[in-house]
Image (cartoon, rainbow, N blue to C red; front, side):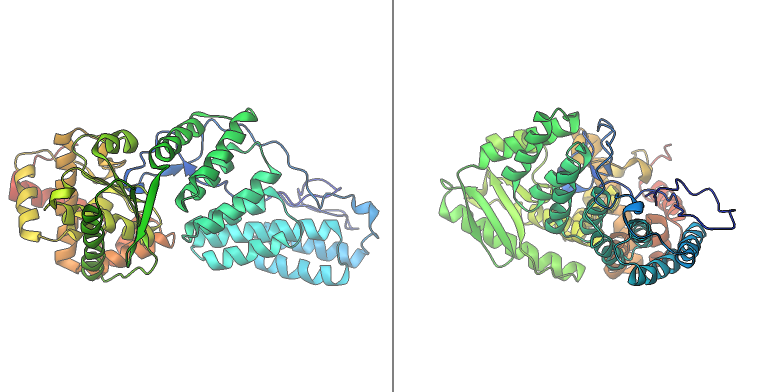
Length: 467
């Protein structure tokens, strides 16, 4: 963000009599929104900026009044302001903020001091966010907003709230930002994603339609409109039943015994996964039951997929009337994705996400035998390549990706216990980079772990080295 007033940009101050000075600091990042081709399955695809979003136009600044309209600052205040700019330039944002707060107590409402304090606060918030202290980051943004509402502040607040797992709060902030900057397609996408996350998909569509009507559409907007429209069209007459741990949506025509069977299986999955991971989430998760004819078309998954998690657990109804014996494992797998998403805030690598979800299914010996059979004579897949939903892969490569991910997590769980994996997820959720978090938990570098895994798979199952 630019600290700007009448004197122009800060390039150093040499004049013996101080003049109003300004400091250019890096802008806070815009909200991270789903890329146009991000696969919704398991909600574990990376987030990225919308490459087709138009460049942001300048937003009117309520604090941009001419400082000349206010009593001029005395020389001591100008010097103190210059000192604050110097502190900020040197990286001491907290010291700069403290000095500017003191100046505003003596000169309340002065635009120069307000603008500079606001910029220092927002850049301090961005630094706290990068350091993982999201509570401190939010407090700084809220203080900046007391100095006047601008789009950058609301955008940063929404990003922070999304990272803390507060989609409703993120939606509230991005709604305010979009009011100030209606041309920001990335903000509209972020708002729509958060509204969809709190089951306000109709309102999310309204936001997206307004963006398109204003001429700011993009492939990402069109993709999200298509997905939400498909879901709303399919679910317009669905009803909901609440269990101890889930909201379950389904067509009113589904047999009551089927709903009872699935509802009981979901609560069983909550108990099993919670016990296996040692994590008990209080807030109800959401699940939706689709007819077989709709499931793959709505979720855009291949025929082999038996369930999906994209913020909601989605299950096809085929065979459930007879009490599908495979359903409990599917629900444990999908509910594990919900727990992983809640802990890691979407930052878990896909191999870790999928491997943990399979490990949380239970039936360890049977699952390990399955993985061994799939891996025998196969080629090792570097973990860095196991990105994006496995649902994008054909059935054969998908099985190999699942099997290798499971064995990798199984080795970690056997050597370090499940608590270590939960610790890793929590560190990722707090914003710690993966390699750093992995080293802190497992006391080894992730590349070294991968090398060991590659060697063990070659020794035990004849897996070829690969690229």
